[in-house]
Length: 167
Image (cartoon, rainbow, N blue to C red; front, top):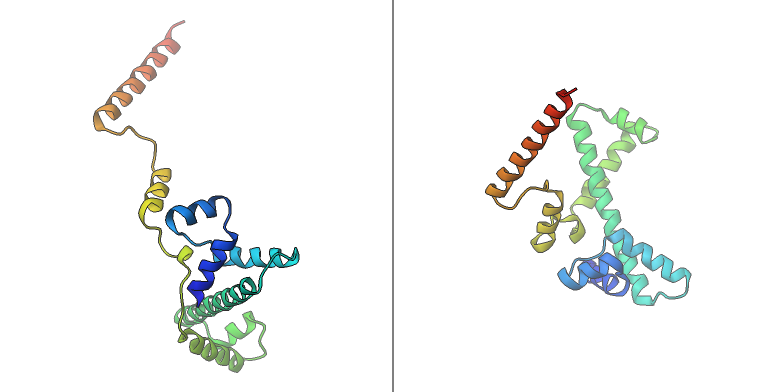
């Protein structure tokens, strides 16, 4: 149901780059962007009932994702020696018992079925190659051209050094 909601909202609300990524690679728009698109459409009277239902499903999925993350933080805090009293103080809870109760509730939530958002998964295919290429330093395609470019740069630098030394 979560993935169907993501797909429906992407088909209805993707625009710009998101639309291009949907059309070329079937990449879904991020959940929060989809939800915001529905709230904007609802405010202008453009949302449909199916859109509202799909957005509500995604809100529940986002809430579950945050609960899972909070559970991991509780575990990490305990692993580093943080006591329940300190966690309760940070969360503005009256006592450690309530912090422990919250952790147990989060652990139960973590056991629920969970559909990770595709936008949170590692990129694959053409998109990954494009992203990798965009972050790669600009170098020559073949080693010979790279050496030639380095030699030209060194020659220019040497010429600049000798011209600076002349009166």
